[in-house]
Amino acid sequence: MTKRIAILGGTFNPPHLGHLYIAEQVFEMLNLDEIRFMPNAVPPHKKVTEGISDENRVELVRKAIEGNSHFKMELYEIEKGGASYTYDTMLELTKREPNTEFYFIIGADMVEFLPKWYRIDRLMELVTFIGVTRSGFQLNTDYPMKKLELPLFDVSSSGIRAQIKADKSVRYMVPDNVYYAIKECRFYES
Image (cartoon, rainbow, N blue to C red; front, top):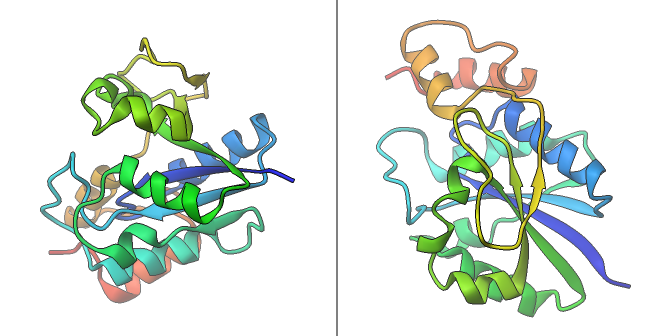
């Protein structure tokens, strides 16, 4: 029997309720078997200038998804280390799990950059993209994609980091256990 799994990649620096909301909506709307959160080691499209260690990000994701039986974690890119192109990652995952139909969730902000993704035409053969709405961006593309218009949940990891640096609360922007871990370890304060 073929499993249907969607990957939600990102730096998760930190993971927040917007990530969980999108994952849950995609899971339900597409009747999937599983959603995998896949923290990046070094995203090729994004310069990471601030944040916490890979191990700490993984632990925050683990806390964020605990208690949801259809949320799992995919550590391939973290364990591999260095920059990872989605094509290479999905090629490896499809080899490991040949009886799985993979989906890949991206925000509308990434949709316009699809033509620039590494080996995008080959990647389209490996996954079905799911584009979800994001404030200030459109889901317009010539590439085949499932487009999900979700109510906007306008929270971002960079916004959360800025709140913390400004000594403002991020409670209710992240799951409670993530909030307490951030406070206890004083993540993102400097």
